[in-house]
Length: 322
Ligand SMILES: [Zn+2]
Image 1 (tube, helix red, strand yellow):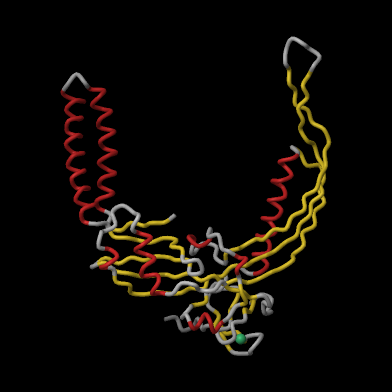
Image 2: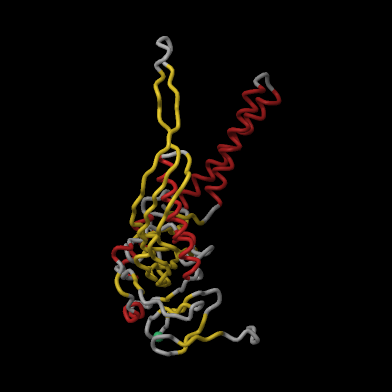
């Protein structure tokens, strides 16, 4: 352990308790009162929400085998023989921004002008003319708190509408670990604002082809720091060990690893032998018969088949995810 790198501390802006500052974090949620402290501004974040945990560890022991049952190659006795070893409840950080944005724009629009000067040809010309309009939208932007890590969570459609006030006691009662955002308020705001601008621009380009002028106002209506619960589950099947990630608010399995059954591997081996036989035949055709072209084609096709069967057979762990 590096001793010269003393861990930083921060005093909670709400309850004054001292908290450790983990590396690469922009916010520290007080472990005593649950208040988020933003490090850059030194202020507390007033709006702190969470999604409630609706699924407990014991329900996951049914949910995961049930989810995996539809995948090919999962051992038949997987549900009976799987031993669940660890359930880690992680509260993952998101920023939620609600904007109201209004854009007035003018530019050149395209329109079709059926040219009638020549009666013999149906000539259609596309012309441009000045156009203007406005876009007026409410938009909610959800910014995940990590840049690189936990990629499988980033694209989750989090049901923001069902958020409730953050309750540190409820999280602790479930044994939840609180993770805080790496992306600070200013950066998250800039990303969210960029999403709003992007959306307006896309909508404008649906109407016109060239923008000559624009007047845009983006108002922030609400900001919230949101913690969403996910389970990381570790389980074993004989000597094999794997893990799954479950959205704990909705009980949805995001990804789950599974062992490949013995019979699946047996048919894989059978397939390899079969593919080798076909390869032999193809090589014979290519080099020792007058069917050379058929032989070359066969070599390519059966080599692909062989590689596929080998991959299927020798991977002992597969991942199911949607
Ligand atoms: Zn506190």
